[in-house]
Length: 477
Image 1 (cartoon, rainbow, N blue to C red):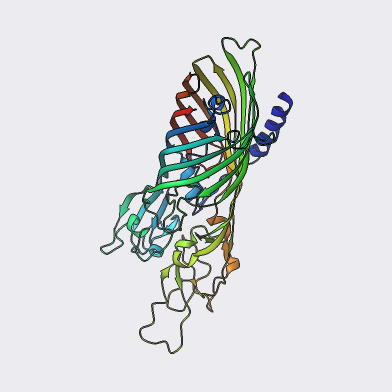
Image 2 (cartoon, helix red, strand yellow):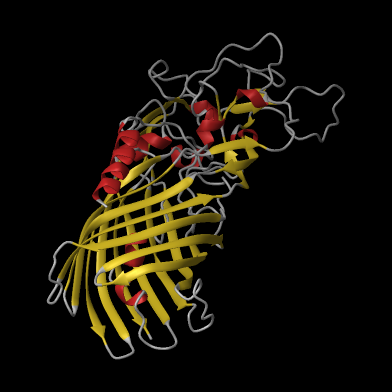
């Protein structure tokens, strides 16, 4: 046991420490940890009575209300902004800040004498309840190979509330027309995608999950349990209309995976109490789906917010829609195939159990790999970075400066898109957790009342810093 544990730790820690200090900037999408993706919360206090049911029905029920809240973290701000900054200077061409600004005011519809400071403070809150029905197969199928197996059904009802919290300060010379300031400029009705404003809450059934497993051993505080998982998405999918949208679930990805739970006592005499070591490991592979994502151009962070021009049309009718100074986000957002990652939840710790009380404390890692996306439809629309007149482009422009016009119209091609700007960067968080509960063991019915808490500290700025509390109500009969 110790050899395998040491090997596992050696595999996990060096691989992540190599990139532990790497930060990402100017991303338009962040995958956030669902509050119910927590193997510790599900197993705590429950593991003993779940695999040692006493009645002939062999049924177990759990209800786990939880509340998860993010904590302010400066590096989360840098994930969404550019150049590793925590605030950006927005200024027009007719200001003293023309050479030091981060965002050219005219690109987002503000006047040329406007100036102000922009920042964001991403925040998330999740709350809900996870319900579990655990059924041993022995009452149904009394066959040697299957009698130790079980099936478990999970349903999570939750509410997710994401807030980007755009902040604007030091505003000078606001416009007399809409948009008047930075907040309005990044939330214009003509922008179909990537608006920077607080998202609406998402409420509902976040996910249905089925586990099929086998308890190989569960006696004298020794436990070995293995299971397979299928996660059926029932929550919403982000649609790229708002940066840092509220997503209830795992972004509507189907998941397939497996897990293992191990426990071993560390003391010899188990008459009065048991002091145990435990290890939980769960891995879920998310399956690709189709979404909308907003990209930037290579080497041009936040180029999604540039204005775009279409080429002039010879002998165009009078009622043709405008082809100049169009919102860049409407062009830089594309329908794509999102190829997600493997979500890993690993935890180890120590449990102290008496006849009526159990408490545990431990350390965990939750993480996932880098997401990948592919444009999955023909790219046919012709457009380029807006120049000084209709039908003109200024392809060397950036979000901070407008370049001189090109001699000829320079269109943006599919190969110019930087896919990483619209993808969620991978990494992991470290977690400290604890729980304590009262266990009442009867003749045929066992019950649990417990409380737990955890804190997640991210190594990468693509993860939120979180704290969570939960209550456990469980029974087997």
